[in-house]
Length: 97
Picture 1 (cartoon, rainbow, N blue to C red):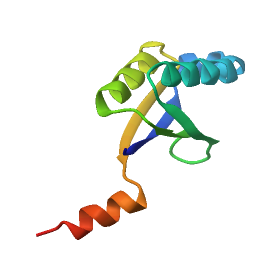
Picture 2 (picture 1 turned 135 degrees about the vertical axis):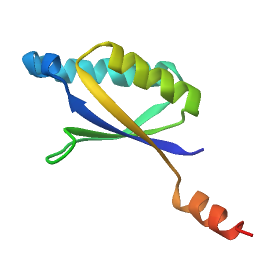
Picture 3 (picture 1 turned 90 degrees about the vertical axis):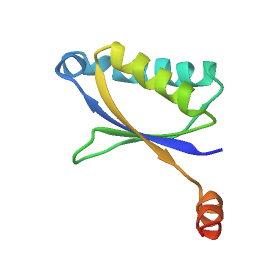
Picture 4 (picture 1 turned 30 degrees about the vertical axis):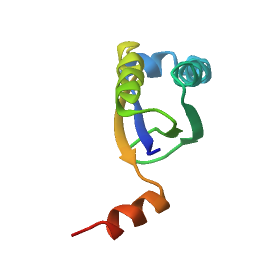
């Protein structure tokens, strides 16, 4: 199954309560798991995005629900990329006409 990469930025509201960010991460992880997915890895980053999260096991509909639920909380804005594994990449390329 394809995975997803979530690029995350804190909003002004999220920065006002940045100390609660680890708790929000735990809540986000629980949300993903409740939908049958897994947070594979998590990174605090420097640059254009504040956080990068690698997720697996969610179909596109479930991933959309996760992103919308997180965004609704107001502490973060997300951008989600669908990600294909190397094996999936090779299969896609191998199936080109």
